[in-house]
Length: 101
Image 1: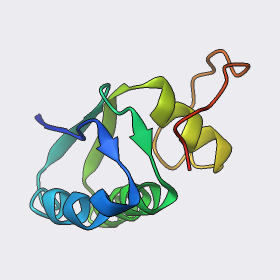
Image 2: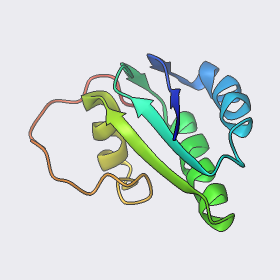
Image 3: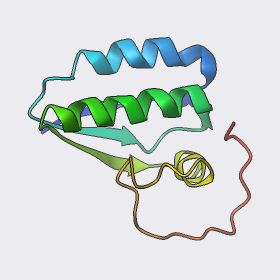
Image 4: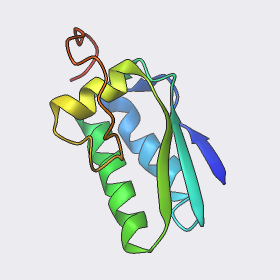
């Protein structure tokens, strides 16, 4: 299984680069995205991630989030995108969100 790091910054200015980086892996049989180092998240990047997951699902490809920082998990939860990104396990939801936009 190939693993692609999402990096630290998923701000709005990083969204186009994220889309370009991920598109190179659209046809990979199985793919894991490592979001363990994500410290900053913007809604635009979450849209890119959701579109990528959906496109791969439509192609019959497996995609998983192998690591997920608190910032990324909180952004997904706040936007109602946890299920789309395969984040169904419950964690401490009382944590304060500072870097999700």
